[in-house]
Image 1 (cartoon, protein in one colour):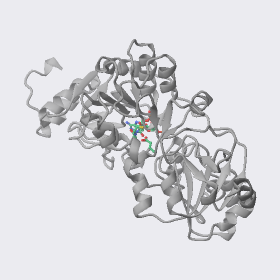
Image 2 (tube, rainbow, N blue to C red):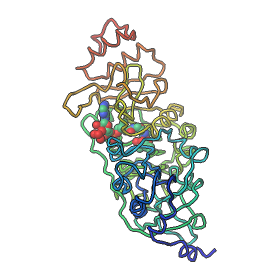
Image 3 (cartoon, rainbow, N blue to C red):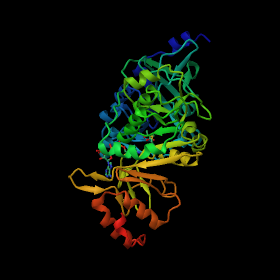
Image 4 (tube, rainbow, N blue to C red):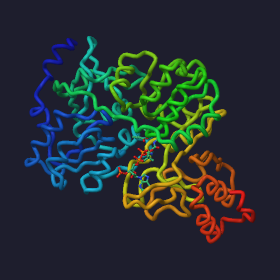
Length: 446
Ligand SMILES: CC(=O)SCCNC(=O)CCNC(=O)[C@H](O)C(C)(C)COP(=O)(O)OP(=O)(O)OC[C@H]1O[C@@H](n2cnc3c(N)ncnc32)[C@H](O)[C@@H]1OP(=O)(O)O
Ligand SMILES: CCCC(=O)O
């Protein structure tokens, strides 16, 4: 096949490309930093001709034009597998709907259950063999393509070429149309660590050993962890993480990560997507020390568990005295999603020498200024349980670290109250007594 002739044959304008979309279709918008811009704009312009077009996306890094054009969702219904701050705001306004998932299973939902009429996916320019690279979001992208009746690519030379792994490319022969664009990669800056983030990271550090294999989640605390690890003298760390972040780049550049002791994917930093600043994208571009894989490999708890000394570090919104963890909602308000928290919590625990950590600041300041404990007798009504109490291993706040595995309900209550903010401990003890999960007679020790 003359791949360049094929390219020219399929090259079109965004307006012509989106004419494939019909009323009632399911349209895929890719994920993270890889969401269409020119095609989104052209589809939004067709608002008045279309009804009931359902979009699926994951963690938007830019405001979708279809939502701007149709904020009341009369023509386009915008659904999302995992909310970014932007998606959260759109959901608050009734312009975005959450789709529950366990992230490691996501490709199987496409392969087994979902219909995809049109997929619109940003990619790097084609190579001489006719392949386009999906950039830093392999995730469930190939599974989308397998189910899509039509595939439109948005070719962009600014997208880093991320080496796999597998399922990181699509061939020109599989594509229906393509358009050429040039937009800068979204810059997603990490939140700077707070003093409490640093204290929490300080409690986890002694749990790491030379050769530990690490997953870091998103947010200030994992960021603090990355910075402390970068300054440590730990050797030969491995990385097997869902999201590739700037703090991991810092760890690699500081010489802490070699991957030499990984049982497989040895010497490779493994991930399924990345959101960061240009520094991260430059690091990933054509970097053979990194391997991007689909999420049903990276987040598969069995795969995770095969690495020794796996360390998984994630955040939560609140938890109750039984140890049930909510990481995705505030009551009924959807904040983010289950994402990969359950995958890594299970996988890390089953790794030889592995540990999983759920971290949280002990308090949360509400928008009206009221300070409340994030450790609560019961979860806020409507809160979604992200991680089941029996799955939880370590809980870490700025007041300490406790292990819940194997603990009775009263031991859990005791342990959790011991790391709650001191101002809330008396009240929590009273509630625990009423709930029948308190037997301590020497509460002064807390
Ligand atoms: C990419 C990866 O992370 S891989 C890791 C595996 N995946 C997961 O763990 C998924 C679930 N976890 C998550 O989504 C995140 O880690 C979170 C939501 C728990 C924390 O993320 P952060 O970015 O640190 O959250 P942040 O502090 O900015 O809070 C997010 C929102 O929740 C609100 N919120 C946070 N805590 C609370 C609380 N206790 N009560 C009410 N609202 C809360 C915040 O106000 C904010 O809402 P806003 O944007 O309207 O102001
Ligand atoms: C899409 C998943 C992101 C996360 O795990 O937080």
